[in-house]
Length: 319
Ligand SMILES: [Zn+2]
Image 1 (cartoon, rainbow, N blue to C red):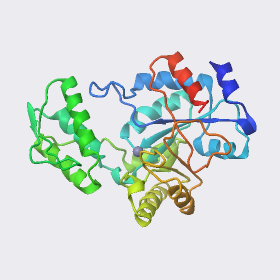
Image 2 (cartoon, rainbow, N blue to C red):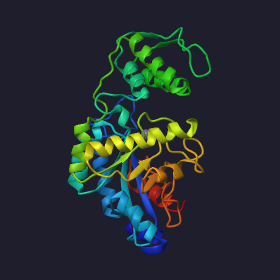
Image 3 (tube, protein in one colour):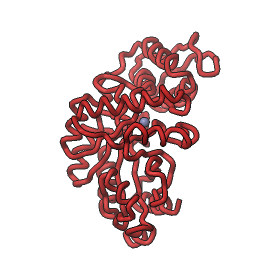
Image 4 (spheres, helix red, strand yellow):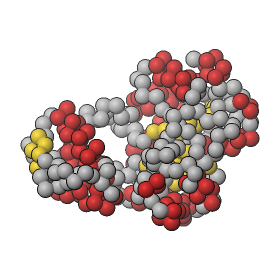
């Protein structure tokens, strides 16, 4: 694989930067989400990436990309959202492999918070009811959420697939109220330790990892007015800087698809004005020297096998 990556990702002015994106690393595989990365897979995948690439801290890598001084086969690692497993499961594996990583934290969920989708997931996972009766609740189009049989893992996975798609398009406040009501209806108290504590974020920082901002409440920036977007982005940075006593120079757009989740003509300029040095999206590509440093693309192959994983990363270098 290495000669292929050397060819597609040379040093210097024509260098490409591959940035991988992750969200969670589960201790054990989750029957509800069999495709989610677990510890054994992350360990294996870090070994592959280390053998193929020169893995750099993301901030330094973006700086070198811009200067035209990247080494061949440059890569960086990143995590979005701020899950506690980033600290508990991913950090020890990153240290084992001696690899740097950047963690983008949505500060509103620190110390006991939870993202709306996790409230829904844990309600469906943990409920001991046979049927989840959501009659009287409405989705983003105003349709009744109806009744759902809660059977085995496959059944619960199907229920979640349907519910997440329907609840997703509610505005943030009714959506939060809806998932809280669903958890109550499911007779579940969802866990409050899914996301990192402030202490865990500090530990990542002290372990030499980079911490970046990811807004406060993880909104779709494209749907906010400019002031609200600036508050979300700026406030998350202030919270992290106060927590770490250090400058936070990187930002990741929530959900991150240009044109859909953030507006390329609005938000990169806003992020720059707020004092960040660079930002990352979820557009699939490897960055080039002339790319906007406030819209660095990211990509992670989903393949389980070494060859397929590697070939998909190679193909990403052609994007
Ligand atoms: Zn996110």
